[in-house]
Image (cartoon, rainbow, N blue to C red; front, side, top):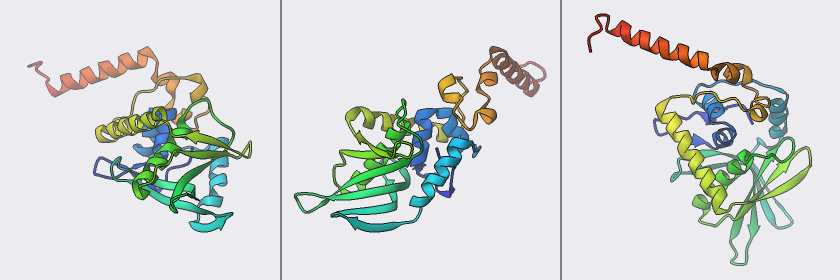
Length: 229
């Protein structure tokens, strides 16, 4: 999960949702809001390794390898979905009709995950490529540095639905300017670099929720000191 960049700016003013936010939102919608709405970030070993890994694919370039055109750092966008970002690598494979079929490849640290955050980010890239090229993009791949192998990802109806619903959820967050409340999930929270900023255990305590309700009620009373309706 990479640190936010200038291209990650997103708002309710017509700016596109960054594709990287989709990965964050599938992992945790609150994490996505903290990063892309509140502009908070914290490095840990995992994020630092991911940043170093992506530096090799940050420069735009194009070359042919065994008949396949390979473009790095390719800018992508979808006007229909209002998303935009940069793909690590897109291969353009020759087809029988003399047209090229895009094949996105996203570089990740570690190994394949149990959740589908990486797959949704890759699927969002495919949706952009389909709109930009008019070609069907049936699959792509995630390259994991730890295994040094590609994991093929099929862009089936289930993954496409997850990706689009996540984009809708992100748009609701950006339009409302409200960060979702914290929910502690041990397997996800322990690996999150924002755990000290998010503090999900504390934020999830019933006592804190009661305090926030009491504070809100006190503020409303302060607005109407005579208690009039």
